[in-house]
Amino acid sequence: MKKLILSLLVSVGFVTGAAASEGTIPLDRFPAEKVSDVAALQHGAKLFVNYCLNCHSAAYMRYNRMRDIGLSEEQIKKNLLFAGVKVGEVMKASIDPRQAKDWFGTNPPDLSVIARSRAGAGGGGADYLYTYLRSYYRDDTKANGWNNLAFPNVSMPNVLWELQGQRVAKPPIEEKDPHDETKTVHRFAGFEQVSPGTLDARQFDESVADLVAFLQWMGEPSQGFRVRLGVWVLLFLGVFTVIAWRLNAAYWKDVK
Image (cartoon, rainbow, N blue to C red; front, side, top):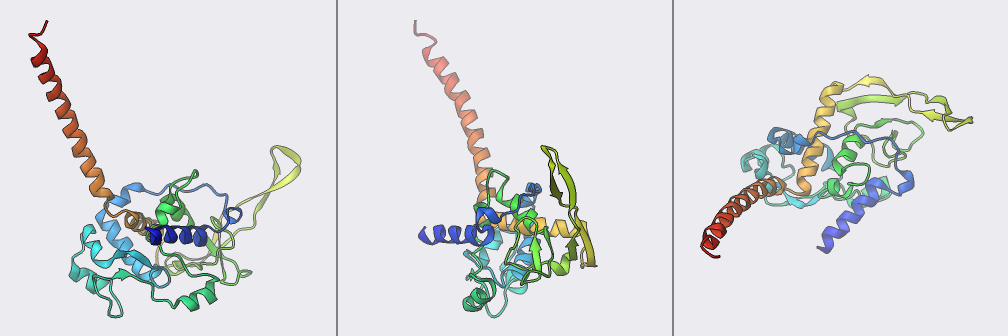
């Protein structure tokens, strides 16, 4: 339990930073149906292993747990395991922690519960991650060459840039403050695509949604079973209530 709490705190600190550094853009709605889509979860697992696991661990998730999303151990071994890792081991990052600290200023957090840790008043954790991963743009003034609209000055580079392509932020539009005409406000004008990626915009959004769905599932792998069990429990209680009501009526019918 202590390790889980520590992982949660580190995740919040690395990904969100101080509250003052967070972006103020509204969060895009994550397609929640993806969490129950086995094909989407399998694709998300593949993206996670190929693009996230190099730096981020998921120390509370074992590879063989992905049998719950329809993958056999043979498929896991063939498609998701590298460098002699065994199917029963936890998902550890391949990066050297010392190098990670030198490059990013801190060790990248464990992502086992990252989707749950980012839930807040502005939306769910999946909404934040879905927006964050689609808000990167080129910024040569930053050390890593990237910036993020949802998390300004983020230390993590855009690991999905080959899929999305490279883009820059258009110059902001200056407008009069509707509350004070003597002031000027800057409104975000959108992105300009510099070079194409291997996926078009729709395909990239779908892939990010699959990745976020896997992160959401990984935070609570039993959530699907829990929901199904809850439905059966409610149905049982409904039937039992009817039976108890009729038994009660039959027992007291002759009592004056």
